[in-house]
Amino acid sequence: MEANVVATPENAEVKDLSEVKRKMKFTGKVVKTTLAGALVDIGLEMPGVVHVSQLQKDPVNRVEDVVEVGQTVEVWVRRVEPRRDRLELTMIEPLPLEWREIEKGMVVKGTITRIEKFGVFVEIGAERPGLVHISEITHEYIKDPKQEVQEGDEVEVKVLEVNRRKKQIKLSMKALEEKPVFEKKPAAKKKKKQSKTSEPEEQEEAIPTAMELALREAMEKNQSDDEGQVETKSKSPAADPELDQILSRTLEHKVKTASE
Image (cartoon, rainbow, N blue to C red; front, side, top):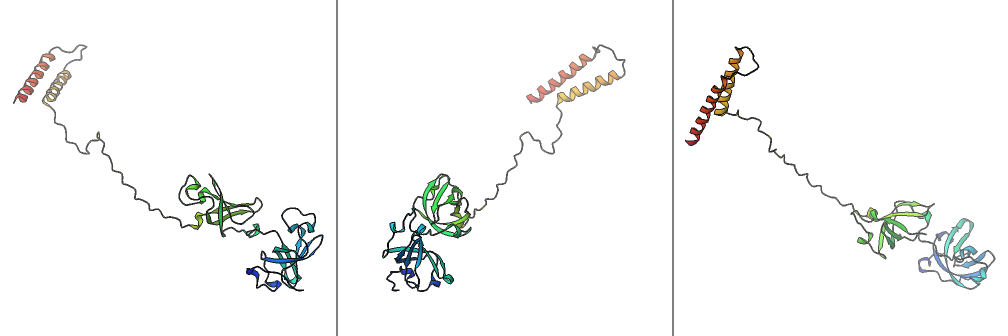
């Protein structure tokens, strides 16, 4: 069979079925149509099969509504089995990153397509964009993702988690950045405040004043006199004049000392 096809530059050297890999792109010619699909010649020893469900994304009632014999079409390799000489093709462009290909820890490039308060969505070529939470944008604290990125920015991200059942992809930008080292400032030593009311550990014994000495002497004398007498309800009036004399002498002494 004469191969009247034009292969894409990246696959121009592919001449054997064993060299064909998934997602390779070819330009071929439709050589036959059936109820189940179409046969497309891409320049190999055997044509590839495009199932009716792989002609386009929308439902197809008749193969001839989409392609016809002799038409040049672009196809991608969907599955290849060299041992069985079987080559399945698709006219629906495959995703650059399929769910089964996404693994935790892998690094991919993408484009920011949407920004929310809680984070940004990054198109990485999967069925759905991945989410970079605001806490995973940078090591520093930010209140709004727009402080660091804008829509349309091309970024490199790391896959933190992939949930194939829920079709969710959690990504991180800061995981690819070196974590900053913050120097700890030495704690300031607190100075012990000396209480104003605190007294020195050792205080000199207070020296009694002349009046205190006089009062102490009078009280001791009165106590000595009382011990030799029988207790009575009323205080002896004889002690009062003597106490007054002592106080009077003490005040005169203090006045004289102050005037000198």
